[in-house]
Image 1 (cartoon, rainbow, N blue to C red):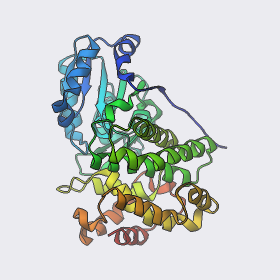
Image 2: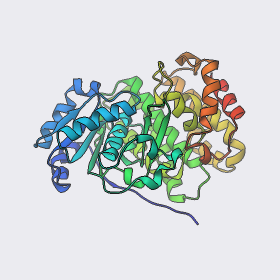
Image 3: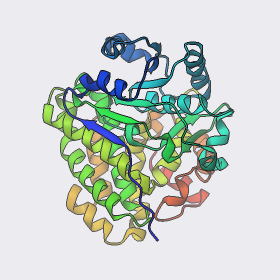
Image 4: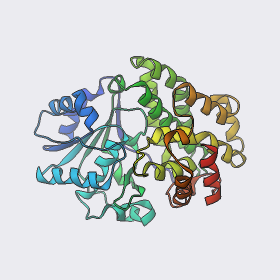
Length: 370
């Protein structure tokens, strides 16, 4: 039996952020907490969102690049002190994921780790949570339509909290908010979205709608990432990249795989603060080669979209975008690789790769990506 579930309300258009006050009214938001990050606060966007809301609000704009349990608790303290009744999350995947975790703990007792997928947390998450409006400012994670929040716990593990109840109430997607994204971040977040489309298409679960969405997202992202990176004001390319990110996340309800099994623990390495999308770009070619024997005709489908030898094409695309050549250039040592190979086995994406990897396989993938 195939179990197929979709998803949440999405409003997608240039200028869509202007719909925020009407949506807040529909959700009866009186005192929302705005969750964002320091960079966006400096641009004035957080202040603009607060002005659009036209109601009393509080702000937590200290989301770290890889969100932590400590940051979740700090934002939760602001939420409770101000007696907020919902959240407006503005930013990339980090801010959106942090907002989801705050929303969870606002109605569920701590600690956070008990709700992670690897701790059996899915059954502990109820639907009685406050409204959450997600406004993405990058075209990458697709967290605005994702059922997961990925957080570095106090123990130092980067884990997924996964439930249909974690989905935002409304995803408000405005490609215009990505126009000022720097080229490097456009490339890294764009490769994140493309990796989602690739991995979920390869995942073995039976979900033809998800596969169709993933392939549509891949086509859009593959054609748009270079023009979006080279010209941030390219209206069409920015629209296509945000749609690619949205579709990648809609599709990964089907499951991800070995790329994310490795990038999640790599993102938790203290002191390196590695960007998730960049890691995905570096690791995807090796994982494509690893999966080839298990995905059959899907390899030919990918070849039709990205060109012959999809693994080589992804590597060439990453290089053309100026992304790092390998893990070594990002500071990942062999000692770190030894640790990550073991941690990957514990990740919630491990079981949904089309070819189940051993610790030795993961170590070989890491070294191949060096």
